[in-house]
Length: 119
Image (tube, rainbow, N blue to C red):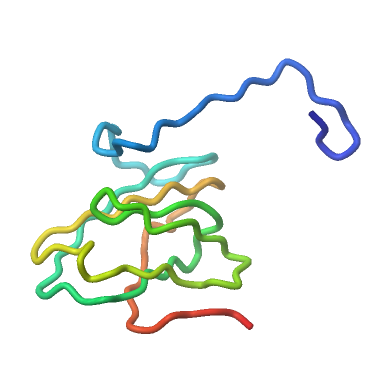
């Protein structure tokens, strides 16, 4: 493996099982220096199609109620992830974000009613 023009030796790769996120242990943290999972709970009165925006986050994946919405990347062009109404529940819902570049007080998201694409 190369990093730039330098050969890398003695590195390991570890698979992450993403089929059952409910098995992940979540604890309160302020900052992370590397990849991490984040969990948030929110309430919906009436499920409707919406879009998830993650301003300030870099690159990763997002799940709503154990359904993978997809990947996000701050470079775009897609700036939002579509959340279909059937994936939301009336009442309590769970958002899990796997941020690949760590987070420094970034635990927020925005729910908007239209798609965002950078042109």
